[in-house]
Length: 116
Image 1 (tube, rainbow, N blue to C red):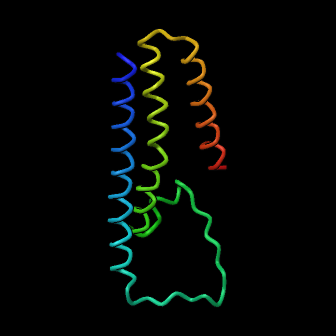
Image 2 (image 1 turned 90 degrees about the horizontal axis):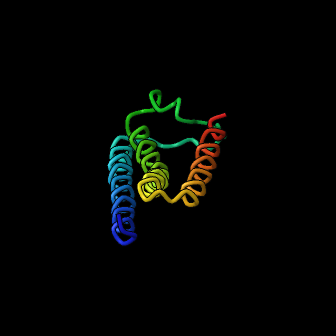
């Protein structure tokens, strides 16, 4: 695999991920606005809602769709790093594999600790 071909694939992967995330978030936003058009929010008291991945099943469907779109957006750069790791492995470039594995470990660590 040439560097130019790898760059083209990575560019297409990032474009597809961002486009998919935009479509899903927009669909969820339109759905949310269509359902909440008549509701008036109460700003008299603040009720913080800490939500994570575990609350995806408990959210109303439009909000779950928006969260799913945001997750697609978060996974897109992770998929890029995974693809780069595979490409470097095919090229047998151990230095870049080590660097990419380090980046991937940092990404997984930061995503994993955000759920705690």
